[in-house]
Image 1 (cartoon, rainbow over the protein chains, first blue to last red):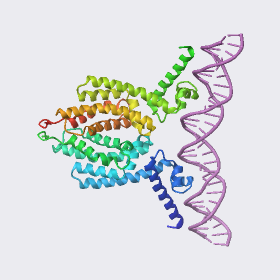
Image 2: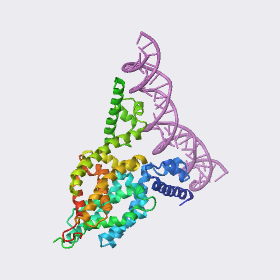
Image 3: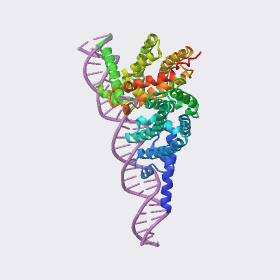
Image 4: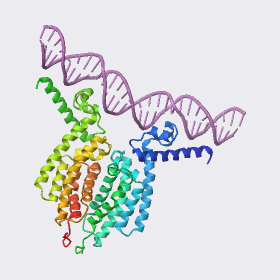
Length: 200
Length: 200
DNA sequence: CGTTTTACTGACTGTGTACTCAGTGAAAAG
DNA sequence: CTTTTCACTGAGTACACAGTCAGTAAAACG
């Protein structure tokens, strides 16, 4: 790779990195392309040599991010036989990049349709892991006979709620850490089949 | 009241009504002051004779709306001895103005701090009704020993989630109607103390 | 060394929006 | 009837932002 190609690649990677930092702090919608360019110390126009428009830049950053978490969760699933363990690990994974997930939770309804579909598709894969786990628990008689989809939405809805109102619930640090215990407690209480009431 | 005062009042009320309609369809953030003025068939500038700025217009509309629902729920509380009944009635009330609550659920994180605080304060009053009901149920031994605040957030988080993603869950009609049964089922399953495990 | 290619520059364009203010005409006041 | 008041008008202002493009300088090429 010659000097020019190297330079180009560096600029591109730098833009992605700087943009991610800005997005995490201000959100995607409130970060301007000029800000990103200034922070990356390149001209405004340079950004559009590397990305056709702002949306494609967002899409690329989120694609990378969501790919990583999906790969991680697949590993976790493989290793976790237990739903509770899976939930704990999922919450801990979200905490690691909580800033960006908080931004997505808030801004999702305002993203262009394509981007929104991509994010929801990725989320639906993760939901399906929980769904299956719950179904298994029900057929094994450990969990109550609830609609698994409803239970999953209860969980994801609550997580989403905490993430989107993060700034109200905590001044700094992680919301999910603060409420991790109560989320786990509630979700498992919802599922666990009380003694003397096992299915079958 | 003379002809002028009457005219002024009419214009003002008309603006409020037209603005509400537009907001419900497009959201507060995506509705422009020009659109509202055009729909109300007055000049753009007229809007600013009646409201100092767009935010105050939004605030006034939401204030009216939230006052109404708070008054209603207070009545419901007075009449409902039962938490489940209270939940059913609350969900039905939300359904009546689901469009505007859906907009609020989506846009809340982007409102100016003052407006956000007002809305969350109003919500917290409603939450407190549920909180008390749950506490009573726990001390009476009917409900499990859960953190009432966590249970309430589970409920409100889920409702909020359905509302904010309304357009994805239903093409037309009410999301809350569609999922009312599963919300009720899940929430009550979470709380109800199974037989043979009553507190005290 | 001269020519071509190309990553980058930044002033500029177009668009969308909240809000203003000098002007108008009809109602109210005297 | 004359003067004053005032609800309303709409062109205009100020600003913010995404995206463009002719120009530049340095690297690659022959």
